[in-house]
Image (tube, rainbow, N blue to C red; front, side, top):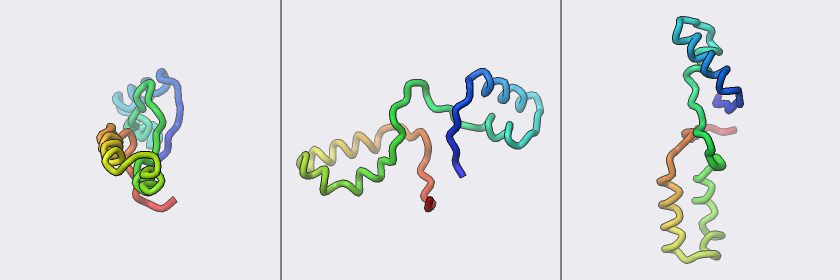
Length: 87
């Protein structure tokens, strides 16, 4: 399971230090190994859904414009990898 939580940066840094110092609490270890979202990140979306909306998008723009936009979306850095599992 993947979970996104919000905690103060000071708490995150404190937990990371505890784990680095040898604390083996499983929850603290998972928090310390977490991936912080970059400050000021935009919306986290399922870009694969855009692929499914191709017909709708083509009513707004032509095929080549759609292809260019999709290339731009595909090249945006991934913040959280796709799960591929069923909800």
